[in-house]
Image (cartoon, rainbow over all chains, first blue to last red; front, side, top):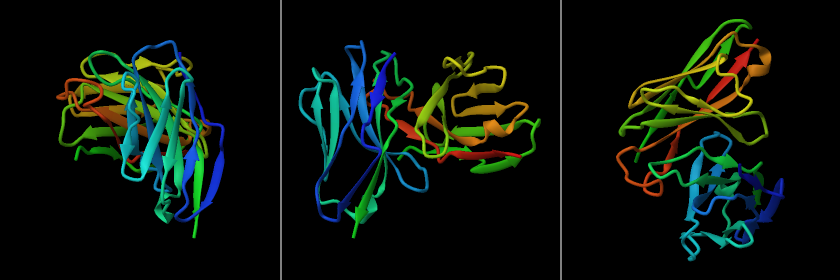
Length: 117
Length: 120
């Protein structure tokens, strides 16, 4: 079984600042995927970024980037030039590679990110 | 983009009754769908994996006789909460993966909008 730990229940930063959300995980799997999901008050789950464990290069999506440290089992999310619309719950998630297709996700407890104007 | 429709978005039922939640993939086929439960201010917990044409796989601690899952077609999975009680009140979310994509990486998980269940 795998576990995902997000140690920051809540974070607050000023608009335009850079913020980093931390995530660590534990698994015995060698091949897996990691994700960051955003859940705004509407509760719709929105994929922010994903990373394949076999790729050493950190994933980047516009203002969002990750720092993936496989040996340390760490997967932090950096949000640059934060915007008011970034205010939401952020969940780190783990998915093992199942060969034929997707598998269920294991989520961390989430970080409530508040962007202050 | 791929859309997963979940219905109803909210439902109120009386204790002891059953309620059915539908999860549909609108523009892709999904041999596998997943059901999650989210309590207020908490994370999503995987309840079960729904497989088209076969029995669902339940996570440890989830009562399969209480949470009935049926995946009768490639685009529809249903979750029935039987004999609901107030402690079953929660937010239920489904997700689906595009079976037409060849690898897990190329088949990102698409989430429904969720169903808020309140049992009175």
